[in-house]
Image 1 (cartoon, rainbow over the protein chains, first blue to last red):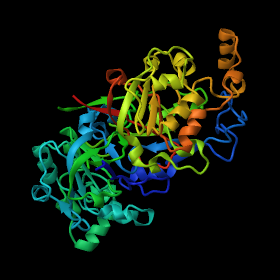
Image 2: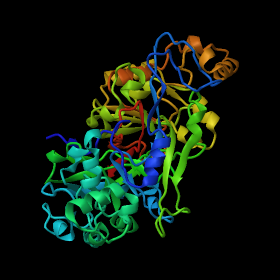
Image 3: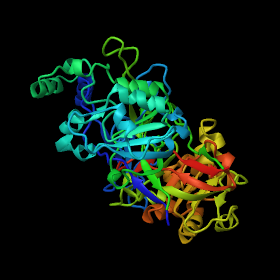
Image 4: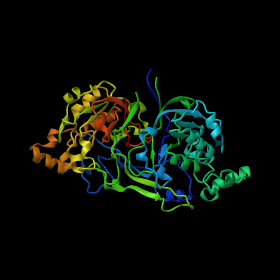
Length: 279
Length: 254
């Protein structure tokens, strides 16, 4: 039987939902364009590079080839399915291009946590009981089913209500010496863990208090991105926004792969997370 | 037997060389919008940088939409094309401006089989970030004949340690596109590049039209696997864009 490749990544495009997170990010987002920038387009004769004054080749008519479409990017490296590098949270951490390839590829499990709902926590117990069993050195992918919310009109639910890891879960993964952790979540931390939440995400703070009557700072006292910090410190690869065809391979053990491009000094990189199932 | 991974991507950073025709704003590279020096709360800091530039820089591939109007972006091309059995063929005997011929491909070792991913090592990656001019203007490259041979062979994906999938002189009309190169070739050889190479980027067009991803600027540890048959995994991130920065990894059983 032939090898089959399953895509566990979410398509990103300029209108895709983005992380709301810190207020400073939102301000940044208002000032700056995040997305794909066309540098040449098919309607114009090649190369049609815009903003290309004086560059060689500008406006040269090419009889055989009517056009070229070129894309650039203005934006950070954390959109869609991506890997966070240790330097994202730690000044002494390595950058994304320096993550050893071995930590981005290997045998692993895709575990089913689709029973989790809004604001549910993923704990050490959940990993302990997971099927297939998580072994040392595994590439672990968690399917909470939340990826179905990653659409522009559902982005509030996706980014603010997702079930996520609490510190006991991160400690379990570190103790188990897993290689990588990926999930159908915006980040390897619970949605309410961005303390002080009332400052960082006031809308979410109000939402939670109104609905539950509880104080998020007391319920989630682990600290700002506590799980991600712990995991990155332990050299575990952390991948966010998994999705795609994940339901088709959930509950399986297979090979997983997610290479970041080799761009120096990056604090994150978009990756294609794939499951390779040998026939 | 244990699997071993080899990185065939070139490192890209500030001042990395770039294609002659690319606009200068591609040089902006990374700009930090959050810095560890400036905590957003006591004891809490992070680094977030913004990339400003083209996706056609360093090791990357050109997606169908780069050359085909209405074609799909790299993230939407079939994933099967980016993974499979591969040959890393040794073209390190090639010199400045040499053209890869059908004969070179026919005689390549290991033998190129249908469905293979073909990585061609011209050795030109030794000039990457060493001599930018030599890297982009002199590399040995493919022209129409090689492109047609690879298409007939039904290869899955191609890649090379070169500045582009087509020969540097295969940019008709070169006398207008890259006049410096046109003049240099004329003075060095007495020949007219626009007569010798009348097709514009033929291999780009063959690959794009036939959904064959074409990887450019391969390098890294490619010498260590040259002459071998192995598995290549080079999955592009899922954006609907014309090109994708790419990590090309060779997986061997040793």
